[in-house]
Amino acid sequence: MKISYDYSILIREIQEELEEGVLSESDFVQILRAPEPLRGLEYRPIVDWYYDARDGFAGIYGR
Image (cartoon, rainbow, N blue to C red; front, top):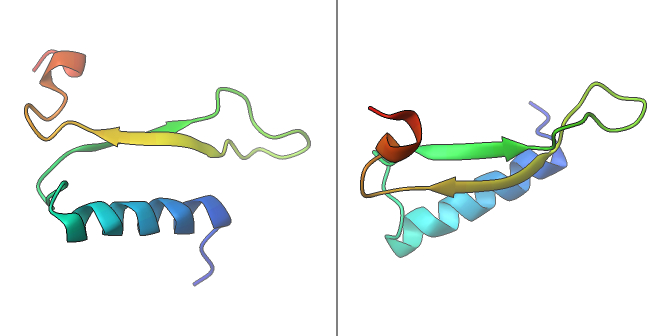
């Protein structure tokens, strides 16, 4: 399986957070992509990612 460059970075960063105990496997992770696709491609790269271990984004989604 070939994983794109930004996915491999994302996976590495999440792995580091898990190893440090900052993030747990039950936490919700939100992935933010670029608003527009890359020129000439239909691919929107990952811009950032974040998580909220306290309420699982309840404030964002109004759960």
